[in-house]
Length: 260
Image 1: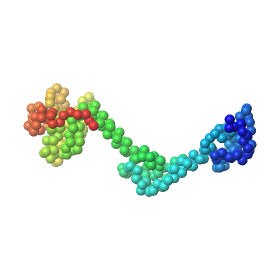
Image 2: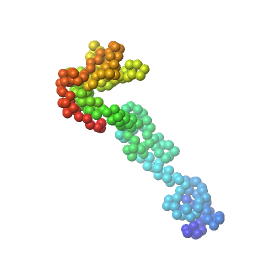
Image 3: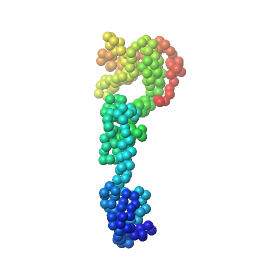
Image 4: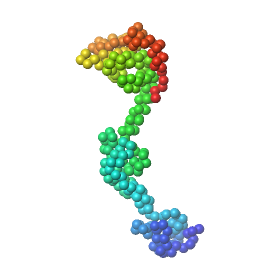
């Protein structure tokens, strides 16, 4: 075993130097050592000799600090973050870099995370990704499986009829929103019209697209109108006249597909 050879004062291994000859306790050799940084410690001689680069820990700290001290210039960009100042070192282990995100938020981020690419924003990017994923999942759960792609961008809708009505509104040059608001009609009844069309000084026109229009649907429409809202219902009797396509044509043109 390596420790069976007596340790002599002055023997050096790694950053440790033996301050005195080794001594034995319970058949195990120990040695009092001094590190290059000045730290002193009593070590197991066998473990000391077998270690690759023994030190009190200062070697690892210096190695980490050296890596962290690679210059990060003001103005360097990492994803959405732009370096706004000199790195601030914390305990010699890692550096925190002041940054400004593209969203305008100021933040401090670990320099090593910036270089590795694991940090690319103040947190807004993750929130956006989470929001996108949540909206996608909501669309799947709510059966929003018909895609409109027009003047209002990409919107997942519930039926091909709604998509056909949306394109009709685009052709008329009208400004509209899809399901922008839910109304509380009474303590237990909520109602969300399909479209809100802005008519300028004339106010808002609400449009409800409903293939089967009876029972609770008819009651909700009646209460909504009684509250002073202008509401136009597009049903099976007037769908073709309003949208310009038949229900069959709408179903073929705007088929159901999973929300991406």
